Image (cartoon, rainbow, N blue to C red; front, side, top):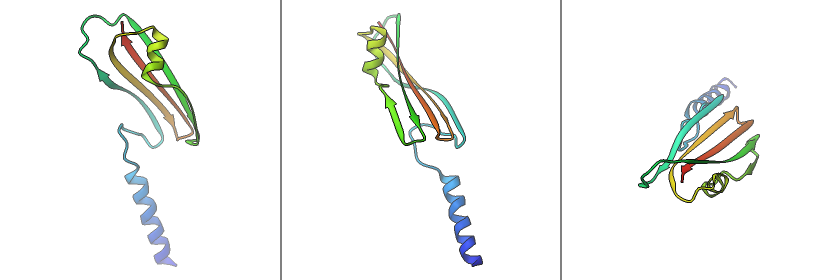
Length: 104
């Protein structure tokens, strides 16, 4: 029995420490990030801004359109300068994701 508990505890600690491999930093309890997605060679000043959002609930349901195309449409942008995105996630219960496109 003691060996089973020790094995279970070791596995739980490994899972807790290792986490999942992601393409952005993630906090176990809370994540709030602002990251770049892309930049283009388009010169000039970005005079327009468009955003697109989606949400995730309990990591089981995700809805919305956080695509670059949706953000371009929102801002009336035809020429993209750069794209950023934001993520906020609390315990995997509520996740909010936002893409921001800057351009002309």
